[in-house]
Each structure stands twice: as C-alpha cells, then as structure tokens.
Amino acid sequence: MSDRPDAEHQRPEGTSDKTVEALGKISEALEAIEIARGHLYTFHRLSGTADLTLGQGVEQLREAGHDELADLIDRELVGRNVLDGRWTFQVMEEYDDGYYADFKRLEKQARDELVGGRRHLFEAEMKEDRRTHGLPHHTARPGVTPGEE
Image 1 (spheres, rainbow, N blue to C red):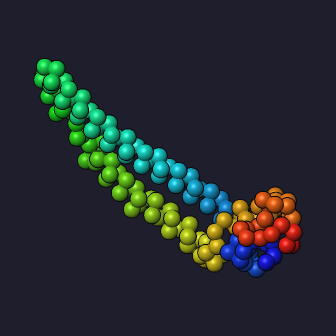
Image 2 (image 1 turned 120 degrees about the horizontal axis):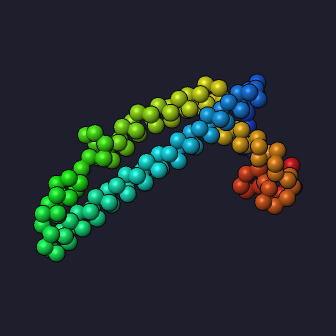
Image 3 (image 1 turned 90 degrees about the vertical axis):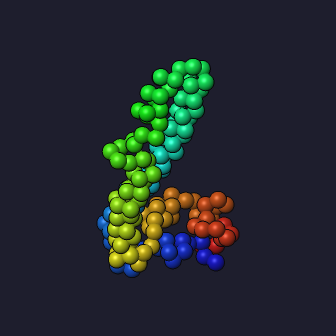
C-alpha cells in the first residue's frame, strides 16, 4: 500500500489550483455555518431550559405567597414566543429547512460538478505539503506503514 492519499482526496486530472482553492473556501464557509447552527441549537436548548426553570421559580413565588407577582411573570414570560410567533424549535426548523439546507445543497453541487463530489481536497493537499513523509504519525491515511512511499 503506497503512502499517498486515497483517490477521494486527490484532485481529478485537469482541476486547477484556483478551483481547489475556491472549493476550499466554500468548505471553510460551510464549517462556519455548521458552528453557527450549533450555536443556534445551543440557543434553542438554553431558551427551553430557561423557560422551564422560570416556571419553577414562578411556582416557588406562589408557594412563598407572592401570587400576584407569580401570575404576572407566568402570564408575561412563561411559554412566551422568543421571536414573533415562534418558539425556538420553529426558528431551528426555518433555519434548517431554508438557509442551512440551501447552503449544504449548493456546496455539494459545486463539489459534484467540479471535482466529482470529492471533499476536503484543499486540506488533503495541505496535509501532503506539511507532513513529514516516512515518519510515524505522518502517513497519508490509516493503515499505511511509514516508509511505504
């Protein structure tokens, strides 16, 4: 087994440096979108946790004899929409079904059309440039014995 990247991480013949760089930037942007989506899910989870915890606090206010204030907070905040007409699950669904889905679809379309669907070509080429050939922990892929160049 040769210590070279697998076929899925080698650019197709005739693919220009500019194309690989452009797809690398689009992939980098997708990574940022994935992180943003994760933060949006964090917002969703924290907002839900806050609402449930707020409900517990309202019940404790009632138990402490503060019914009027408990009723006000319960009416004004518990179960309230975080955005116009939306709880956070609805925000997530709209994001996932709209911008996120379109971003994923178009990134994949660009890879499919330009490099046969191959992913991370820019990074794979960077790895080849940066690794020390022939040393342990610097192989091109799993299962290669160092020195199999």
